[in-house]
Image (cartoon, rainbow, N blue to C red; front, side, top):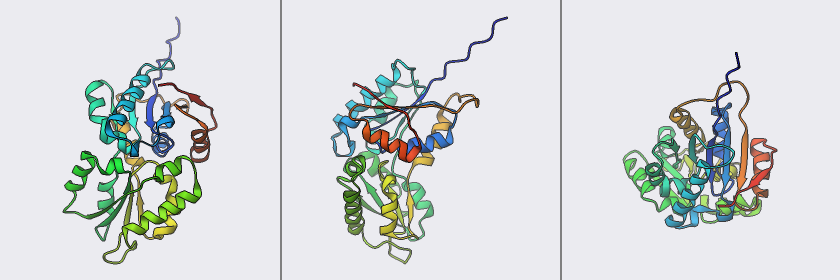
Length: 273
């Protein structure tokens, strides 16, 4: 009797405009260690946070379609590892691909409310996310539970993308300074939401600026848990999952960041879309 062939192991697709989504990928790999992932950095069009909605929707559609028809295997789920792309495109992608589990990200305001004692919460985000109807609705739904100090952080995602440490530190100092006083005393901001997937990579600098008692909140772990819940089947727990990295532009930043933050030493493949 012949042996039963192993079932095809379809990967989970993850995309962002650049390296920011690696913060989500790190949490996904911790939550789902046996799953395969394919990560797309749309680096030739980064960052999305300073693009208009129409452009972000077009890129999100193109990347999703490519991941569904990629020669190395159709994805079984999609994680939009970008707040801006989630706000602009997730509803359209879900309508166009009803068979595909799609998980998005949003600034972690609800977890911040749950842990804030002062009920004064800072939110660092991109201008694209800040101006979206989805974000405004989220803030309005929590208005009676906390006061949110929302700060658009123009240029910060791009500085992180280029790993320009000097500019990252300067921008973090400028934007946290503009938000007001941080701390645990009454009237101070005691919780800071990192509302762009790039921003966790600046958390070391932000921690020095806001102090050790302020909580920094990102959305990696909640997104990973939601992805597990949405999967219709899990990979068998036999071998650790693999991860392929693709970039639409220069892959050097992605390769360096993946090695530094995730311990991934594989090459970055070029992707034309």
